[in-house]
Amino acid sequence: MNKNIAILAGDGIGPEVTAEAVKALDAVAETFGHQFQYSEALIGAAAIDATGNPFPEATEESCKSADAILFGAIGDPKYDNDPNAKVRPEQGLLKMRKNLGLFANVRPVSSYDALLPISPLKEHIIKGTDFVVFRELTGGIYFGEPRGRSEDGNTAFDSCVYSKNEIERISHLAFKAAQSRRKKLTLVDKANVLATSRLWRETVKELSKQYPEVELDFMFVDNAAMKIIQNPKDFDVVLTENMFGDIITDEASVISGSLGLLPSASLGTKSSLFEPIHGSYPQAAGKGVANPLGAILSAAMLLEYAFDLKEESQIIKDAVAKSLEAGFATEDIQKENPKSTKEVGDFVVEQIKKLVTVNA
Ligand code: IPM
Ligand code: MN
Image 1 (cartoon, rainbow, N blue to C red):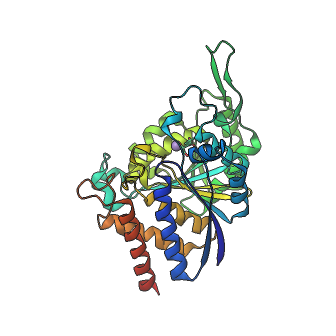
Image 2: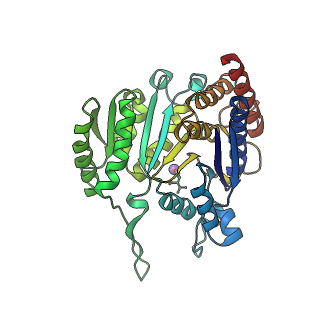
Image 3: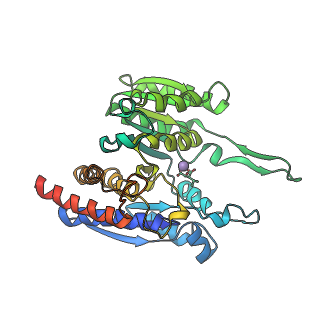
């Protein structure tokens, strides 16, 4: 298979973790006889510094002409406390999601046996957790208009807006995922308060008639936040709007063992993009301590979702599990004698090559 992948490493630890994900992709290409070509493009603070624009046109072109996009992280503290900053790196990420039509963000959450002992949650509660969150990504309060400040500056407002069509397209994907899993779909909303949530319920209920074998239930987001760590094994597919999905997936990462482990796929009409759910972790940038496994697992999702290479994708996931079993992990997971970003990436590459030999 011959494919072009756009690499948007971004800010902070983005470039370091993305480099390890590319190594894993190269190991797969080499062992399975695929050709992957990479084209690098600027996004976020790095793009603002170079061009004044957090998502430059050249980057958009590069994304549109690629077969898939691998993305690192975005954000730089120099913009966080600057009230005069006219553009923020995060705007690049949001513009990219919007312009590329990446409406469905898929975030799988599972526990790793090797990491059960380091979790702040009890082993018997989290062992065997396996659910996936479908987070709507191009609507809701992240994008709704009007938004901004009153003229006197004393009032600020954001709008949460959803159309039926926006709800339907991601819901179809979530129902289909449930069909091929344990056939349970939970819609997480705040329908006791929000009009948009009531539209979500109504729309999803209507759609569920097309998926009679999928059991549908509804949960308020505050209750879901509790249930996710109290009874994570009860969940199979979780469907939710943009901001709720953002919040509950950071929470859910505690089940896996580290925020640095969670990958995601952002699926759209024209493109698909793969990124770890963590941020740019600026304090760690350049130190070689960042966990590359979320990025490496995002590369595994890329192979599965964008190229339909299921076996190759599984090999990367198995290689990651092996590195965790071997205690070969960065400091977020391995407190004593932690490994560096690059050492973990090298170990995963070695495991990929070994697994391919065993399976051959
Ligand atoms: C994420 C991030 C982004 C989001 C930020 C950086 C804008 O937290 O991808 O989860 O809120 O969507
Ligand atoms: Mn987030």
